[in-house]
Image (tube, rainbow, N blue to C red; front, side, top):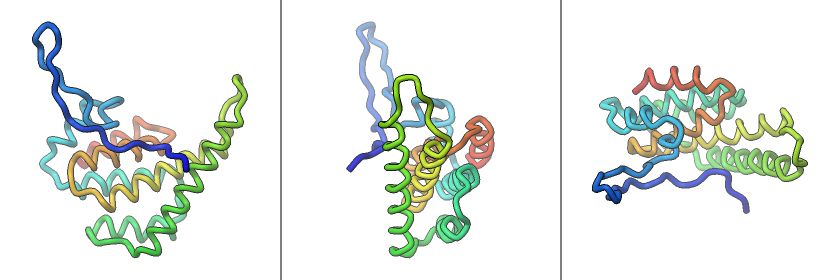
Length: 168
């Protein structure tokens, strides 16, 4: 089994040689957008607002079939569990999309670019990861991970970021 995503990073502080306290990256979002990650972690808005905005962006960016995305978005908005059978369908599609992308990446020669089909599979897998993460998010750290996945599903990350940050 292959994995594309990794678990959320944890928070830790360490002392540098010159006596300064530094904070180690806490989420994957910190690696690319540390200010946004901190806004999410400090947000007074509910986690549901943030993850709903991120899930909507992910669905729109990846062009997920509304029959798949609609019930998940509705469950996220209402804060209710998604039907287990439907969740499994999303998990299976995510796994299939990840494998399609990884197989295409493995087949690339040193100078070849990823095909549009493989890139679409990557974006679809990231969008589904955002949806599934949004369904399970109860903390701002988890919300930051959902935002990270939603941004990875986008071909216009800056536009997606603006839309999502309006919810923080």
